[in-house]
Image (cartoon, rainbow, N blue to C red; front, side, top):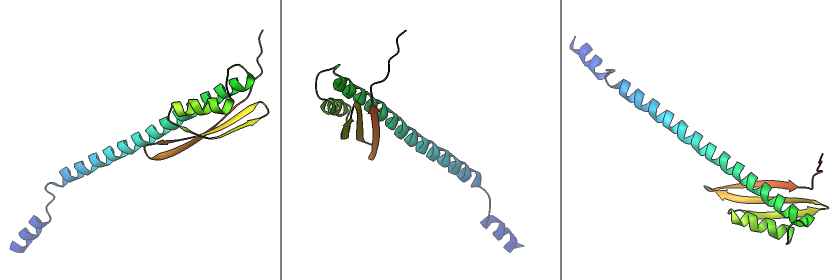
Length: 123
């Protein structure tokens, strides 16, 4: 009988709920941290794409003669203004293509933009 009591006290479930609760809370916090990091990176890419599109549009305005300067230099100034690096700038007839690189939290993001004169219809 003494051996049975010793066996039950050795494998007691006392305190296991606290450990399980701590494990669940840790897992939830880890998942929340990872999802916040992923959403921050997604937001950074969206911002970079928007700023790159604006740089391409400004360069296209210069190409069409609506602004003064050189198209690729204008795009580079705008890209440098938000902390990016202009990797390529190509002009094909009246279209302008640019590629921009930016490092955010140790991750390098690359985006591309194209601007071309559109057809305007006024009624």
